[in-house]
Length: 109
Length: 127
Image (cartoon, rainbow over the protein chains, first blue to last red):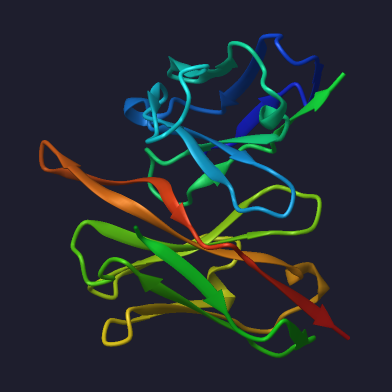
């Protein structure tokens, strides 16, 4: 099973600032099969990025994903008020089980 | 637009069986292009994948839950279901159903990210 470790646990930033979230895998993720999701309170997760760097439909271009192998990054170039939420990475390249990282909370400073 | 909707009891007694159904609208659960999963999230915690099913009825389960989980599909109703037996308080969570795509390349097929999710349903296990 691939374990995903997200850091930091909490990121305190102001609107307009840049957010950099990390996701590290315990072993290489096949073909960059890594996704990022945003979850707001009392809502289901929303797909942001798949294939490590492809934006999902309707996702603003201030969200970008990068990385390969075991190290992946989600960057939000300029935080908007609606971007303060919890973010999860997920790998799907290996055999089951599908696994998620523990999440990074982006909070208003 | 594909929509998924979970339904089922919100309260289950300890040691009994949790049963949930996910109804898919706006698309066919019989499509060969998709897998259908259950995912759960205890309050204030992260996401845990429970398992998935393909239209053929083929399933994969999280090893940590495999001995207690059954996922089934009813193509006539465009639904898939979750049964989790011998529940305890640790099974109290919001349960989501979600869709992922089947992607094949070079003779190998993969199950990809979750592109559509249900709104989630809270199941509380009581003693």
